[in-house]
Length: 496
Image (tube, rainbow, N blue to C red; front, side, top):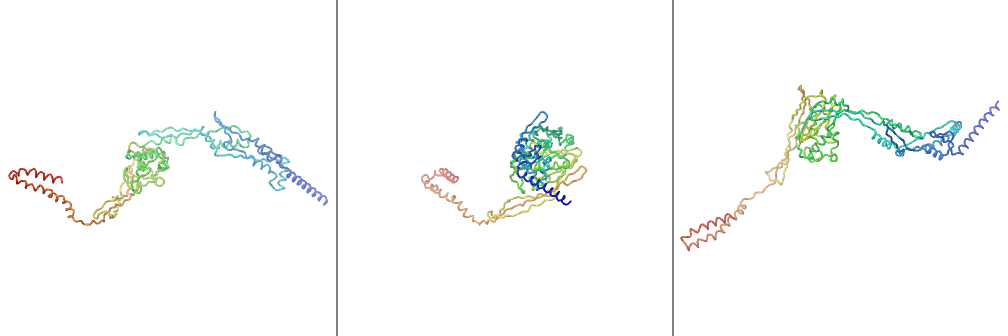
């Protein structure tokens, strides 16, 4: 019994050793891929790596892919999107089957392959997704019909709404999926049919029809002869107009206009900087924001961000201005109604007009009042000038008083709502007084120098006084000849 068991054990060991020796010999003596190893649907058994690569490249050629929609078609060369199969990697994986694990695992794997088991290596692919998107964008540009939103038109006092239109666009996600499926290990690419989906308008006719009345308006005047400022008013009015604000949405003046620089079309014009008028880009824009601020107050909308200028404005009452500085100071308001509103700004001649339209159910018939709650007296600063004579003075800066003001909405039932508080800082008045001492100078030398010519005149008249000597000849008739002498004497005094 024991001898039989030993014989059986030795037989098994012999068989295993024989198989192992044969496996080792076969695995070392061949550089080909083992039996029943596939790349995709191609059997690459008993092929060397280079033979397998040639076979895969022959079967999986990079060609072109076709698309069609109705009677339109497109053909795209896959090289345009840098498409390629990862043949080298797939062949390397196929060759390593039965070679890349431990000795006994490799042996079992090879034995199973030889017994008919199949091992499949996926043929992966790669392409430039951005280039594919570019190709698909071109197709979309040809096929897409974008929807048209309903729009509002204001003509005089009439409000009209245009119909919305649905559109049709390429189902881009499905198209990409179809492309990848078609390229998935397929040697012959079929034509892909493009699917379109309906795309509805975002703003519907029925929705905009709710805007049927004027909720509030305000206008201000400007000097249209100042070209730069006029253009800034026109441009900022245009960019903040034609906006539908849905319930709960917030309007931002800075977001609507965008950056206000020379490259954006804005011009140089006077602007207020720290309480002083200076030349700057975008002067006049604050008149638009201030005009809108008043229209919004009349419309009953919620003001969420507003700041007054450093000095009162000439085009609106005190407390009713709204300054803006791109990137730092904004004017914002929110649509607090359940219906949409429409912002409409126009420039006509020398007037800027802002109107807020909405639903007649939201009209409040509001009046606005503002009042100065405190006058802040200006301070007076005295400076001294050594070049200015003592007792003299000049005003270098007249300064100005400051103010605190409050602005209210007044409703038909008498209710008052505080909208904003404003502070306009005073500016110091500067007086310059002289400290230069002026020495006292006697007046006499000045008189002597001035009278010298008068003292010389009698000297010049002496020859004329000698004429009486000549009178001795015609003693009695000489008085008649004195008239011309006196006339000549008077004439000499007038010309001196």
